[in-house]
Image (tube, rainbow, N blue to C red):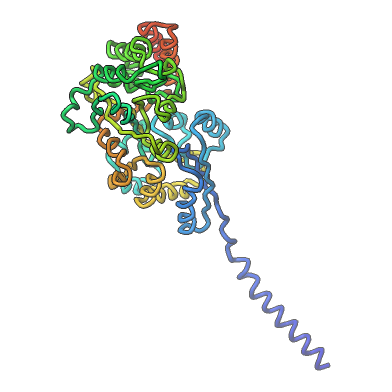
Length: 432
């Protein structure tokens, strides 16, 4: 009987414990689900593993948030992002240059960060030069947070200049010969360094590259621009634009200083292989030069001055900024913005700029010119970098202009006709 009593007592105690503990367990909130932020960026030479260094730190600092990173080629950019946004499955955080993101903002596919994070943006804005910050703004709203800027300058082969007894082109505004470095002088030098019989060329250049980054500088140096955004029309159908078209045509056909008749999309390879004396090159190509062509003795010069002295002193060259944007369709905008804030901390910007050899947009960024002296000229060329106009149809405008210049280089059209047709096509597109 005592055993039965003891057994019943144990059951009673267990029942009491169950009744006591069960409500507490039921009231306890379930563990928070882990969220994943998708991050896409076209490569400037950086790899997934480079970004994982930053994201591992972010994940450690933010338990419960993981980052899925995709670093991809620039080729096919429009198709990749266009399809993702159209399908309603864009990345949470994207890297988009100033010429890319406005069309997504116009389509209401990007988050208006000033509406979501007003106090945070007000604090961040103090960390960036005004010109970079405003390039992330469209129709009164801030969509982009500046990260880096890309620049192009004129590279030259020192050995080829030395062999011909020609002075190096100026790399600084302080050079006594800087004022003499004009289109005419550039052509004179390129002609002296061209010898088709030896497959040696004065200027490696092409109209068939994937973007117009090496075409537009001639427009800018002549004094023309791409678009008049306020009037919603082209800004190159004028004497300055014609001068630019003629100059490109003459480099290929009159002066014949360009290899492959200006049609080789891999024209920089001609320079890398030591068969061209000069070529426009991006700063992020410097690591490629150092690694794959260590014997190539190169220097960097500022752009020659064209006739458009009232527009960036006639030395306008390509230089655009890249921004972080958050998709409007993102289900994790708070976490996405937190990731952007983390990426743009000074120590993380410095780390990544050292990887890609580009320039951070932060006010406190200092280029590593001691480690890589070639970067110094890019920094001195900042006053001549022309920003792209913020327009949702700019990418389409690029294609129309490039197509007409290609027809001109192929001798299918005169410079006059190519200019006229390009202007008409651009205006028709903008009017749609």
